[in-house]
Image (cartoon, rainbow, N blue to C red):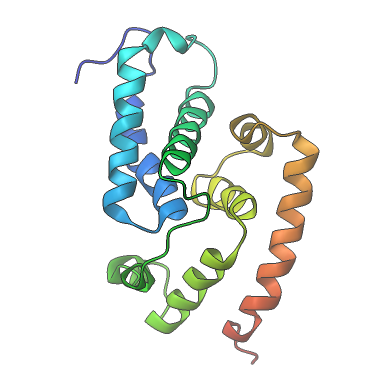
Amino acid sequence: MKKPQNFPDDWETYYPRVVRCAYFETWNLAEAEDIAHDVWIKINQKPEGFTAGTNFRAWLFKIAYNTLLDRLRKERRMVSLVEESALECPSEAVEQVGLDQEQAECIQRALQDLPDDERRVIVLKFYEGMKQIEIARILGVANSTVTTRLKKVLEKLKLVLAPLVSVA
């Protein structure tokens, strides 16, 4: 695909990141890939929506979340879709961070159990490495709301995941 003139040079590297974010919303890889594909079609049909020199990542993820929400509304499913097969973490990802399969499944279940707004903050902050101001723009909330959600969800995860931490 030809790079639109006003996009940054690394624009195509964001595709797998959009798939990952969509996966954490749908828990279905095929559906996540479909959503990412829809996002790519949208940004290529209207590249003038992005202003060169502004934050491409925030613009792209805003489109991704809007696309995801549109799809969920259309399907009349405003709750996360969870499949049993999604509980299996890819073995290479588990090995990469030094977790055993049981620990990885526990973390994934903890993420699945979070309300959508809390999970989105965690995914954008820790999986995508975004700053709070970027997350606020993407989610359409105040920066203070992101701060509050982040603090609340980290406390919640700390309690849920405490058994994973071995005490020496």
